[in-house]
Image (tube, rainbow, N blue to C red; front, side, top):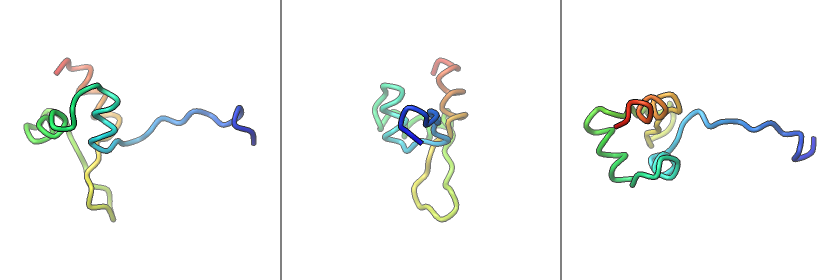
Length: 65
């Protein structure tokens, strides 16, 4: 399989830093939105770091927050 034939795969979840990079907001703003309940994070089994699902991030962006 060549690089050209590899399909683009969207992430299922983002770290706080990745969510900040994707949206243009700061990591502290992302953390605040999670803390205030505007953006949902989950902790995957076996991981101590919370992530933000793609669905949650898209819903938050579309809500205009």
